[in-house]
Amino acid sequence: MRSLPPVSFPPSLLDTPRHQGLRAALVRHLSGRGLAAEGRVLAAIGAVPRHLFFPADFPEQAYLDKAFPIGDGQTISQPYTVAYQTALLAVQPGHRVLEIGTGSGYQGAVLLTLGADLYTVELLPALAARAAALFARLGLHPRTTCADGSCGWPDPAAAPFDRILVTAAAPHVPPALLRQLAVGGVLVVPVGPSGGVQRMLRVVRESMDRFRREEFDEFRFVPLRGAGGNRDNGTPD
Image 1 (tube, rainbow, N blue to C red):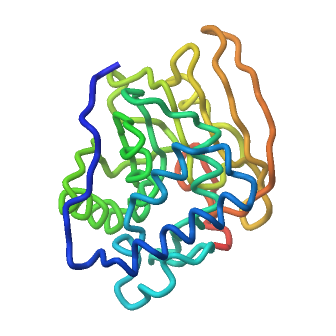
Image 2: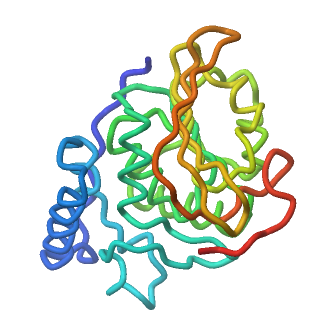
């Protein structure tokens, strides 16, 4: 695994003591929702200034535990969902992580804070450009691209990945992502119908041709678009 420097966010007048207090309150809330044992994940949630990933007109919504529209029919996931998926992923410093669905960039920032060597794919050009600009502004340096993430990272030479996280609802586990998962690696993906309820799955690759699948709680996600995703746009929740 590649050795990575710790992530720290540059001082900014946009991140005030009030924001820091709201993040601390959010962490306490998530701890009370059953995530108290996820110390590293909660520390990352507490470190990332979520309001910077929000539409500028709605900063007061940033530290509520709910999803919020970010344009193009997409949402920034609620903090509980981000923490839950991240905990299932079990990222360790230096892990090569593929994120499918960059969106606002918030989930990616949490993964980077945990020490991930992050590759992140976004299908929609406007969201991809916006997230890349924000990463640069915050001094974060993931590998970003605009492509069909349901088909995995566009350059297969970058695979295999230690961890793969899908941040949209897939009708099934995309085969391309299984092919790009390292032996011993973990894939977390919500699977279910577009516009309905999805079951969170964790897939562990135990050998080249053997995968172990585990099912967890139910969630609602916007649909994963692309060749390996939903054929319709569904209904964002």
